[in-house]
Image (cartoon, rainbow, N blue to C red; front, side, top):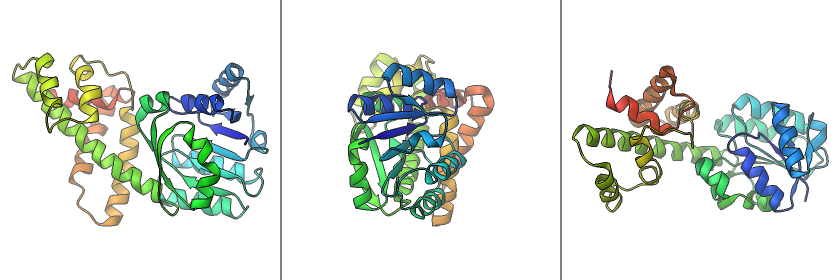
Length: 285
């Protein structure tokens, strides 16, 4: 199986490395050509300079930033991939974008799986991502060896768009947990509680969460090296808000988190980890 990978950022580069380790990677591409050239040289694979360089791929996986990037790449791949090939999109985009891309590729006999991921940079580096897939089961089976190279779990959630719908649910939960943990730890600081005692006590009880375990100690040290950037959370929450409003549910958690991350980005923390939210909780405006 020949596989291409497009989007070599903090998530994509380690995912591509796992594909190489599995003997599946043929070509890598990135908007910044130097990144593709460097990783291709490191791994001994091709660096794409146009969509034509993916023409011999059985599967092409993408992990890019914006809906427009996904559509642009898919449109280019539709012109060169052979019928029966599969495109897997690990980006977080709208349900409508996933369906648009699926239709665009289907017109050329190319399969599509919308497959956003959860687990952050750590999950990508450890090859332990949770993948939320939408599409046809037989198409997913074609791409499964590729996705399995960097995933701990692959869940087929339903038809096209169901992966992105699941990611929306995931981001509501993540955003709400972030809000609670940052607010709670900011309160603990103000009350003079010792972090070395507070954190293990909280983690031993019902208040525990992945975010508290992985980010509690670092945020109390003002260490905000990104596992997931605040600017990316803001982008995701804008997508999620639209999905939730269309679904007709109350969106208080989404609205608060969106407002907070917008303020955080305005304050210059867009490149910081989402745990930088504690900065706002310490000094509310």
